[in-house]
Length: 287
Ligand SMILES: Cc1cc2nc3c(=O)[nH]c(=O)nc-3n(C[C@H](O)[C@H](O)[C@H](O)COP(=O)(O)O)c2cc1C
Image (tube, rainbow, N blue to C red; front, side, top):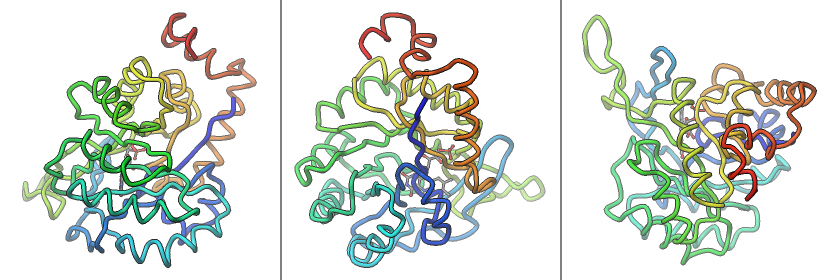
């Protein structure tokens, strides 16, 4: 079973670890915004059982510096590049998509519509997708929040607005307190929670959206092993992205591919076959 393995946005610095990034089927950049951002003050990372909390706050050099000096260096990796785009209004998303539309190096644009660490745009997720669609003909993946009340319904709406795929999911807002002082451990208070404990929540989102739309889905959230990848493919993903696992085990892409290969020898040979097990016959008949 050949499953594309990507990194999750913000979880791998390809210029610092090019040997890891080059083993991926595509490299996803950290989210870029129209203007440069320093991100939130430290501490910005905390571990709590089963979770990692971060409040990086979209630190990035801005779309212009990204386009002229970061993207050309990423091309040396020799893998397809997905550029993650974010912002605080529909015009921010439009600005970034317009700039990237001219650049052959950016194969896919992932719309970060769900960062819990920064202020939200006043427009709806659907309006942000529409604005992005009007600015580019490149494939657009909508990255959604697991905190969405009805994610299947939102998936249908972003598909209608012109998204070509879904990235499921981003982090959930969480809080960690210092046990001695009871002060928040992150400078900003709350942060985005990721890691193994997110996996069942992410799987439920993938499962629901795979039943609602025909778009390809990148499964993201607590993938730690080849067995986790099989769960995401069975739920309905067509690719997976590795996030928190890369901090603990930078060589996890190769390990997870090996584990997948061994799963094939156990008899799981195709995505359709394992989806039928997870969803039943009705789902398999339309894949
Ligand atoms: C340190 C850190 C930085 C992140 N930065 C971004 C980002 O810039 N853009 C984005 O869309 N998601 C970002 N994420 C979310 C991840 O891409 C991913 O959706 C999330 O961590 C869930 O996957 P995981 O449980 O495998 O880590 C970040 C996550 C972490 C841990």
